[in-house]
Length: 91
Image (cartoon, rainbow, N blue to C red; front, side, top):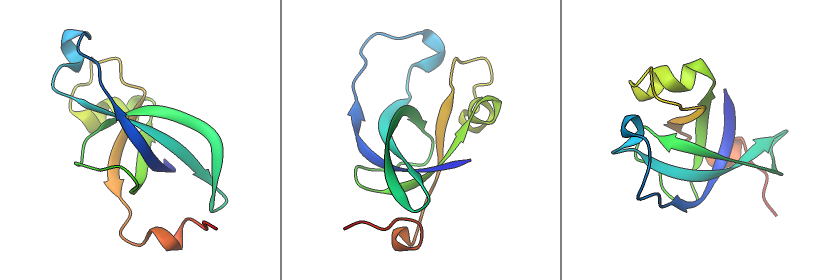
């Protein structure tokens, strides 16, 4: 699993049927308690919002986390960090 900070929502009016009803978010990856220049698009499974620090499952764990194991999902937000200061040092 990885940590990240939600940057913004992604709007997609046309997508595969297996992805309909999912909310997509752009997440900036956190490594060594710092924001990196790496971003990814993740399916939101927990109702996360912009600015929150989240836990991200990737690969097959992401598909299982969405409950749609046949969907083409590579990253899923599976948790919201209650104490973001404990995992992210921001200036």
